[in-house]
Length: 106
Image 1 (cartoon, rainbow, N blue to C red):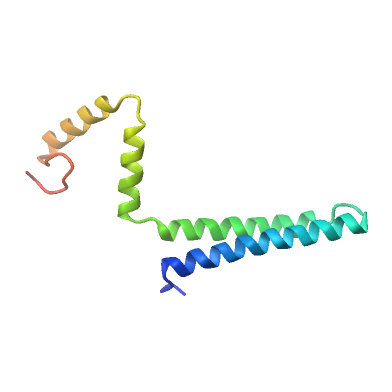
Image 2 (cartoon, rainbow, N blue to C red; image 1 turned 180 degrees about the vertical axis):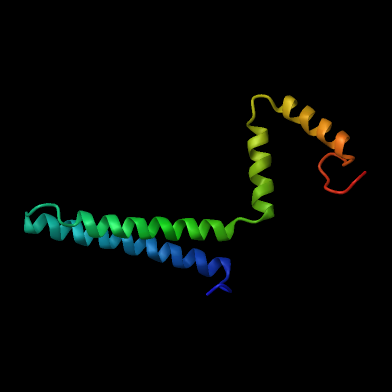
């Protein structure tokens, strides 16, 4: 299962999410028709935790260096003090002997 492609993992998560929506509707409808206490809460709560765990596993496997760089660039572009961040990066690069934006020594 560790060798599944990203598309297959995304498809499996979407299927799980749709099954949750349909199952939620069925359990809630059955609960409403029986007019008892809200017994559907516990199966839905357990299923919600399983879906949340599946989501976290799916997202953790889909994070790679490209995603991290895009996210960092996005956060940097939305920063209210980007010039301060740039000056820190330049000082770090001068102290370590690395050129800005590069992991290899200048």
